[in-house]
Image (tube, rainbow over all chains, first blue to last red):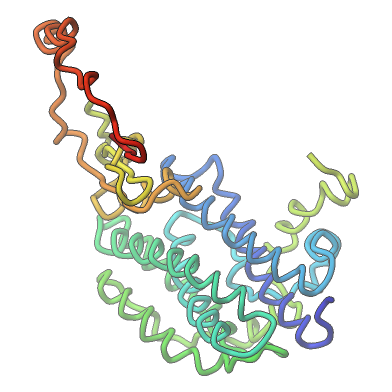
Length: 240
Length: 98
């Protein structure tokens, strides 16, 4: 039967992270800088979609959760809803998020609970997502002057969205705040090797504080879910 | 053979071993900036439906191919020498991959 209460909320929050990032990555289809990279991003998007489906199926009807909730009902962290921007922005978002997700799923896999089986399976997928982001961060950061400039700008722009990842998620049997230190160690090692720097500034500010997990989203998110949901809303229950 | 462009990187040939005991088989080719990325691209392009347990990537420029002009001297002499084929032996039952 379905999870209820806070356990269901936690499954939906992680499912929202996965679904929203999956949709963003899917937006690269037809636009990626090279064919091989398009397939790589689509692969990652499909992995995340699979995670989202499993997580939603624990909490209720997948289609209702994905297609029939309003913006304020989504509990994803704001980081994953940020627009793709240039390729460096997408890679920076991937680096920040997959590093977090790998740590989170590793903890979840060893914790008691309904999410442990998913986490144990998904952690392998996420390890590959992180590797993909690491490889590109190194190449863009230590590449040409232009690629380095863009990668640095992307890391700096998205930095303020990373603080929220370590807010507690109610119903989740993981101390997310404790993930920040290993996250910072692994991300900064990659960034340093890429001859880039993490920003000095705070990783959160007043206006982004913890918003996503409480249903507060950035402007771009409304347009994204409008596109994501319009088909199902116009033709409820439509299938291929 | 030379598919290299400045934006896509050089061309790589991909060989996939589908399971232990079999040899690597040519699966196709792809573009990648370097060997590490070529291996990852190969994983995404050629093994995502469980096709393989091992991948080789080789720079396409490192493959030395026979030329169509050499087809006759290379391959024709083998056509009429039936005694070169191991057709006179009984193959024991249960032998696979021979």
